[in-house]
Image (cartoon, rainbow, N blue to C red):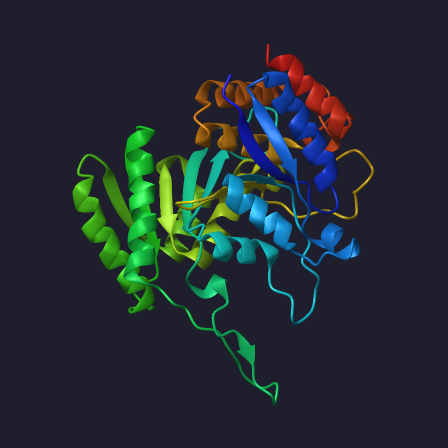
Length: 336
């Protein structure tokens, strides 16, 4: 069996608990994964190694694949988002956020299956030139959109649609107002789509896209958009399926990929053993796809679905009374 080595960053708050649960599920697959444990965030800072230790960065660069729990960036000026920092360091230009309904969760919609592809390194969210003037009366941030950045994430989205046999791509923008930045992204999409004639393309202004999502999510298949819009839209999609506890994410570049639970570190419930590990387990399934272990990824998703649908040892947020590890064991039992 081929050995595949993965860097694992447990993270802060509930991170270590949901990471243990996820590694238990992966271990039950017996698919040849080996782990390099690393630290970042408050756990690293408290150990005197800084928020993002150089050795952690080196490990990700060496192995090219990481599974990451939630990281806490200290509040206050002078601290850059650790997630943004990792995306910049490894040029992880495509953020992939699937939102898929799981029977048994408390959600308003039952058949959601949307993939949001978010440009991950440019735009307002990247914080370029973000500053407060000395008098405290004016703040500025610069939205930088490039043809290169737009083209590569758009091509990623269309190739994903072709590969997964999805037939609709919605390009979300604000080119009616942001004529230069959103306009460039929209122009790039019109060029790229010429290479994917079999895929239906729809253009939506971002405010209308958000309204349409909550009115009728079935009309969406793949959404591709810029950084800040994608951050907002992907959380709306998570709300359609029951919340961030069911929302995995992947940050993908040409040389590295980091898979994560997109929710926060939830310090209020850390150590209580009640955190839902589904988001990180589903992120691990995305990682398995990336490692060309598609059958194992399908088994994990099916096991999560089976455990939730049958209310088998679910955590409190899923309507049960099970612990994090109880629920992980339920998922393991459903693997067979």
